[in-house]
Amino acid sequence: MAVTRTNTVQNPGGVKVKTSSGQFLHFRLDAAGPKPLFSFESNVKGVLFQNTDFPNDPTSSYEWDHLKNPSDIQQLELLELALTFLTNAKYTYTVELRDSVGTNTTVLQISYDGAPTDFAAESFRVVIV
Image 1 (spheres, rainbow, N blue to C red):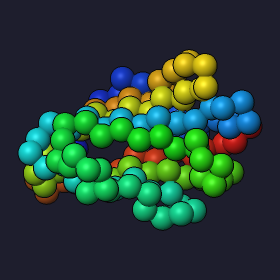
Image 2 (cartoon, rainbow, N blue to C red):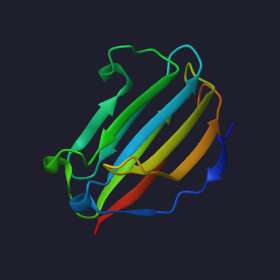
Image 3 (tube, rainbow, N blue to C red):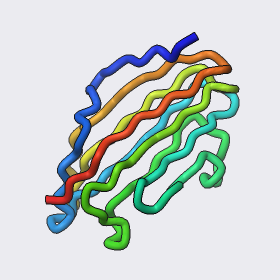
């Protein structure tokens, strides 16, 4: 069975982030199932997070920030989330552009439904402006 992908906010392919004014990316992965399996990777730094890196794993929601630390900032970085459906049937992936004054803009929100043999990946490029 192929993964069913449902866009709430379609992947823009690239996200402009003005890190000099305090903007950063906030990620949330919601999982419906007993044991989510995922990996969040950068084409520059390799694997940044896996579900096992979170102290409360397994859980129904994982959240993390990227580009708050100056050492994270890489021009044209490709970020990819890889999902496995082995023990988890559904995921919802949300990416928000946030800033230091509390403004949040959803730049990507996609739900995925799959069978135990399925895999899915979602990626976008980061443009520092």
